[in-house]
Image (cartoon, rainbow, N blue to C red):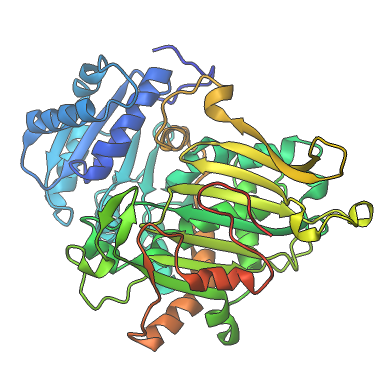
Length: 501
């Protein structure tokens, strides 16, 4: 296939997927690989080795992949299915069985680049990594590399994250480990860096002198559906905050790195999380709100309450929504509040970052009430659409001076010939090339958990404290509105209207 980006293709390699018969492989990894193939971002000498416990053999696995690729075409016409299947094989075995890894070694051979992808439950991470090390499958030579991709969640609290990092670093170097967060593969997320550091008019305004506050929202319309058992052991905070939301936070707040490659970018992101104010005892309740969705309607479809979902205890106190106020103690951001929120079964699916600038002096507009002046917002839309919106004030036509807000919007879909994307394409390509810039390092993972550990400890000590209930299809609990209203501000509406104050 023609390389549409005029960049170097990866070297020959085998992608080894643990948990290859699972939903992640079918819904996201295979569509991403097909998009990469279409764009010329896979090596011609590419191979796929699936590993799972199901005893289906090579032909059974190929049939499983074929059905999945026909269901999730990934924007292609289906003509490349045979290309993948003829490069695919399968190893059946339990992850704790040494024989499984001997079979993997036999399939790979000694002189083959290999990328091991852990598309498994988090409880299997240490097991797989330990056996990969025991079988010398992560051992590199001068001519061949071995790398490891690990999905989130990376730990469920600070002690478990530290323990997992220790387990992995016993058998692999940090530069072999790629802790993946698919949000960082989205174009708008990567464009945060380009927008900030390639435009001369941005950087002089990107500080406490000009920015009033920042809002980061990750809203989902789906509930837990059939994931009740796993989600109830996790909750919204563990599922989203130390990884997705904190990665977005660090990109918005970091200092300019020396370059965009190597560890320079990750060093600056780690500094941001180290500077986040500690949740001391007196402000944990004041600055963190949680909630759980009750029955309601989303997109005009009925949704049962979380506690009535399959495999969820009827008296569960697991949160499905969390909102918080953070501060960053450095010269650029001191005094600027960052408001973060995420939740399930909300009214709209929306991931965005809004930077609200301080208002201009009102001397010229004494006759215009301040509450009627529009806000100056810069919003980075990440999903479902990707783009950037700038909101500013203009004069309404007519003899009187009346001011209204208008939006100037850039959308990726309209501006560029877009290739289909799942968010994994760039990350898989970078891992094959050995570029860890968009992946999380051990210290960043631990820094994120360190910020949230006092909150987790407080919730644990409170026991079965009653949670605020919000209706499915709403914008979340009223307590979240109060969190930001105390500061004289409002959340940006989930329907996309810029109504912050």
